[in-house]
Length: 344
Image 1: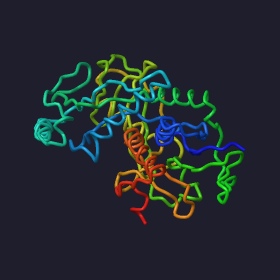
Image 2: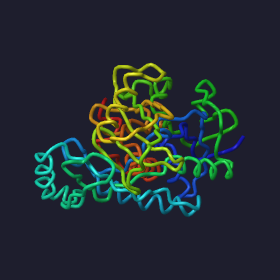
Image 3: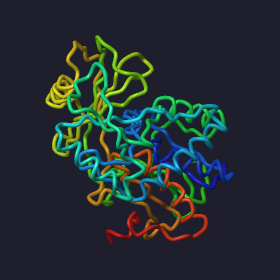
C-alpha cells in the first residue's frame, strides 16, 4: 500500500495546475490520466483579459494573468520550458462604431491596461477598419504544456495512465486500489457526469470545434487575429482557426455545420486559398454564472471537486488551483462566487 497526500482524477488544466500547487508545496500525489485528449488538450490556449464582443473585462482578470505568468515561470523550473507564447490578440473591427466603442472603453479604469488606443493595420488579412490590440494577451503552447508536464509527472512516477474506477474507492478507509490517500480531487470536466460523488454539480457541455488549415499566404508572425474566431500559427506549420460554441449538438462526432461555419468565417478575413487539414472538437464544462465550481463533498469530507472552467480554462485553472489548495490545507474560505455551496 502506497500512502499519498492526494489522488487527482483528471488531466486537464484543473488537474495539472493543481498538481503544480502540490509540487510547489512538496505534497505527495498521483494523477490519473485516461489517455484521451480532453477539451483542455485541444483548446486554443488563448490568454485574454477582454471579452471581445463587448470590449469588457471579467472578474479578477489582472490578478489571474499575473498569477499565470508567475506560475508558468515556476513550472519552467522543473520542466525546463516556459510555455507562454508572446502573441498579442488583434481584434479586427467591423466598422467605425466599433473603433469608437473601443476608444471609449479604453478610458475605463478596468480596461485601461488592456485596450491599446493605437490601432494597427495587418497585412494579408482583411481589416478595412484596422485592428485593436489587446495588451497583456498571449497564448499557451498547449501541446508543449501537456507534453512537458506529462513527461515530468511520468518521470517522477506520479502519472497513472488508466481510467479511474469509482467502484474501487473504499470511502470509509480512504483507499483506492493500492493507494491510501488523505484527499482525492476530481477534475474531470464533463466526465464528472459519470462520477457518483459529484454527478449533480451544475456544469453543462458546450461543444467547440476548431480547424487546422494550410494557408497559401502566411499571416504576420507573433500575432493572434480575432474577428469571429481566433487565427494563429502553430508549430506544425498549419494555422489554428476556432472555436465554435454549441450547446445543442452534443453528439460525439464532427458537426459538418460547425466546420462550414469555420470555413466561412475564415474566408471573410482571409482572401487567399486555404486547405482544411484537421478538425477537432471538445466539450467545455460551463456554468450558468461563468465561474468555476470548487468545493468539498457534503458527506465525504476529503473528497473535492474542481470543475466548470469553461472557455477560460487556463486562467481559471491556474488561479483557482491555489484557492482550492489553501481551502484544503489552510482552511481558508473559498470565494462565494466559485464555491460549490452557492448552488445548495
